[in-house]
Image (tube, rainbow, N blue to C red; front, top):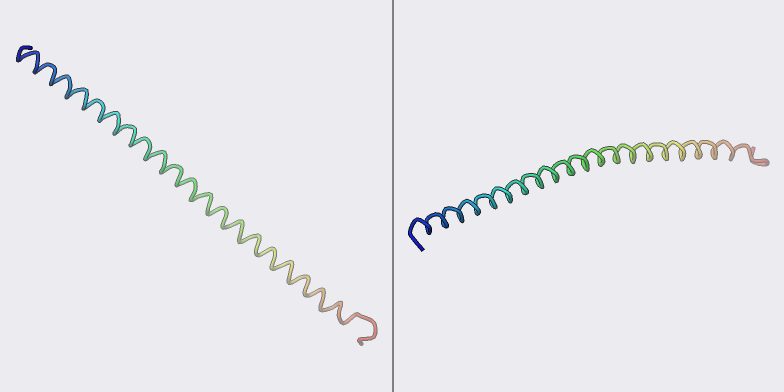
Length: 82
């Protein structure tokens, strides 16, 4: 093998390594962007879930209060109590 052939092979090897590194970096960048998008969607969904939970708890409190109010007046309406 001649010196110029060896230099060409080394140069080709270096270029192949650089191309592989660029491909890996491109994949990592795309994966990071995809993960960031999923995290953003999860955060938005979590906020919506918190709001739904809060609304359900408020509705439950309202129902319990209404039932307690009804029970209070029905207690006074029982025969023999007054």
